[in-house]
Image (tube, rainbow, N blue to C red; front, top):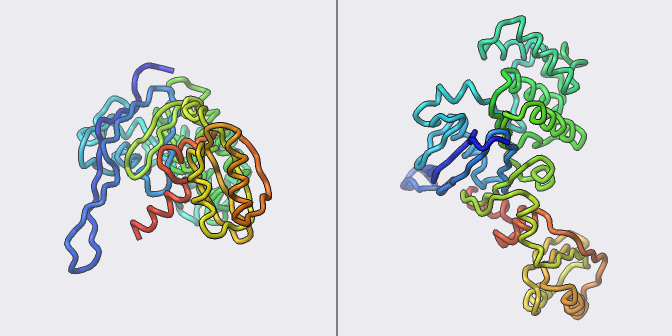
Amino acid sequence: MSTSFAIRTEAVGRVYRVRGGKRDAPKSRVALADVTLQVATGEFFGLLGPNGAGKTTLIKILTTLLAPSSGTAFVAGHDVARFPERVRPHINMVSGGESSGYGLLTVRENLWMFGQFYGLDSRSTYCRVDELLEIIGLSDRAHTKSSDLSTGLRQKMNIVRDFLTDPQVVFLDEPTLGLDVGAARELRAFVKGWMAAEPARTMLLTTHYMAEAEELCDRVAIINAGRVLACDTPASLKRRLQRDVIFRLEVSPLRGDALSAITSLPGVNKATHTAHDDRSAIELMLAEDSVISGVVGALTGHGAQILTLQKREPTLEDVFVDLVGVSMAEAERATDKVTA
């Protein structure tokens, strides 16, 4: 990995003006605040955070689609706000869930058309399209109308479109959103292979899938409410929690102040609770193993039946909970309420 930087931001901020109604005065909503990051050339870098955390806003700034309200950002050595025309030839972007192209055209025809938009000659475009369709496993659908493709196959076509120019820096914005397990696995395999083939290539991935970030990324920045809370390798981020012992319990639905009784116990550093129709799931970060006996006693004392109990190693979800105080799902629900 090179020590030069493919992406660099310095105190980047973005503020939106929003109105609540016709008579309401404009209000400010902070989407990003003082984001400072450095992504080395050749690095697979991840932005991990809930929906509404500011990930897509940052990608739009880095791909010259949106101007920052404050701070500066550089991609491929160029200021994205001052010299967007110098940035664009070096980049491309894939967004999850997007629909692109013309439904009446076949996959191959759509991709040829995009090649013309990029300024590629027809012969080179067709050769590149056929090569990428074979790599990504879509060559058997080359002559299928894009309107007849499933969501997963349409996303594969989008991947081929955005790799046609062999960009220096690729931005993946929730690329597996809405895909089934098999299609998501194939997409991840493709981008890993693309990175491995050329050391100077750089990838920035935004995702709220913990396992995806852990599988793909050399380093991960955890972002919430527009702020970067931590940035390191997945292994190093998880090591920060090695002081805690992590347990997951499934119990019958909690009643009364059972959760409060748990969190007040000595040695319970953090507890999160997810209620289901027929059970409750509890994640615990404990100071030591012996604390679990007190937890079990408190639960049974409040009438809860222990269904399952397991000790496990820390995950990036645990890191997020440690930094934010709530789970990723809870953070997303909180964001939805604010933006509703």
